[in-house]
Image 1 (spheres, rainbow, N blue to C red):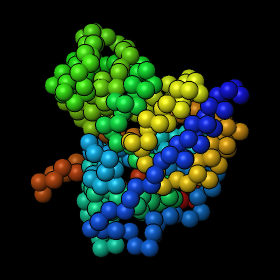
Image 2: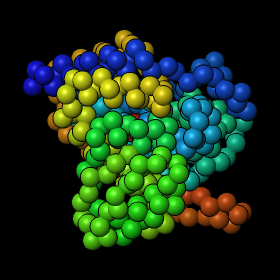
Image 3: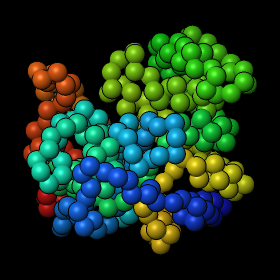
Image 4: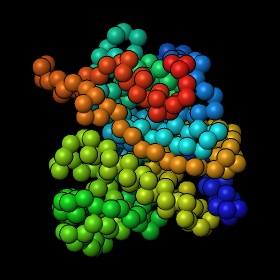
Length: 310
């Protein structure tokens, strides 16, 4: 246990020292005066962080639409970590002029700040920190881990193999072993993990979100089981692909608290799920229409199960 705590603390320290915050972009809808519209009165022992996955090949993580958005909610009292995927096509109001668009467009118009503000306003939350990951960095990150083990559903081996073979030049010249078509579990290399996270042909965006959550869990398991040298190597690899506005003090403080409490459980959710939205494309734009009040109750019920402060 002591060694694991030392490893986690060292990894947090390295990341805090090495991760730069995203530079401010030339946005069309910048957040005024840093106003993130933080909802007051929520449990201070729960830390909410926005995880953003970008789909750019370059290191321009402050721009472009957010490919993946997850609320990572850490209960520093119970040790429970809740991760909630937010659908990209959720139709929301953003900014101060009543502009309506898909949730993931907020990142393009105003970077992480506008995205956090929009989520806070939509779901009565208090998110002030974000961590952005360039999805194309998953290849190098997973390879540094030595791969990840994933349980596979029917047709997923075929989808992974097809994607990797179609994009072979993007992953270098090293031959990548095909996954047997009937495999129910496989050790994925970086290229295969990225292909897995991006599968969309088999179902829909909800299936894609579920796969991304499974990959995140698999990567977390690898980190927990890593040695100190492996964690140092991992932190170095993450430098080019991860960005955050969390300070050294924030990260070390949170890591210290979690080392004391311990992580009792990690729970994965998606919002909205099937049956919790109305699909609309009447104006030519595919979008998910949600009931704001229902969304607030659903998300707060997950993050703050014993509170009625929202």
